[in-house]
Picture 1 (cartoon, rainbow, N blue to C red):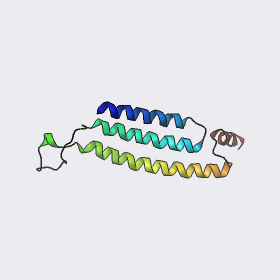
Picture 2: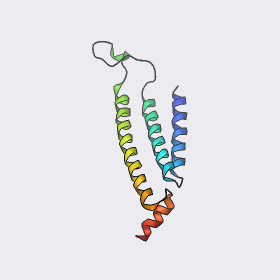
Picture 3: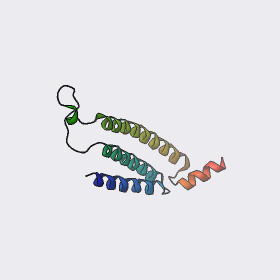
Picture 4: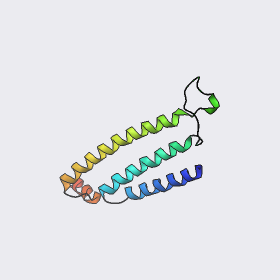
Length: 114
C-alpha cells in the first residue's frame, strides 16, 4: 500500500512541477495546487496505513491507537495551502488585469519597462 502512495505522490508532484514550468499563470496556479496535494499525500504516507482505533486515552491500548500527528499536520497543510492558493489567485487576477494577459513572459517584460 505504501508503494502505491509513493508512486501516486510522485506522479502528482511531477505533474505539478511540469505545470509550474509553463508560461500561463493559470497553469502555474494549478501546478501549485497539485504540489500541495502531493505534499498532503506524502505526509499521509508517513503514518502507519493499517486500520487503528481513535487516539482516545483509556479507551484502547497504546498499540492500537492511531498516530494523530500526521492528521494534524495534514489539516495544517490544507489550511496553509488554501490561504496560499487564495493569495495566488488574487495576485494572478490583478496581474492579468494590469497587463491584459496571463503570459508570464509578457508580465516580466512589462516589469522591466517600469
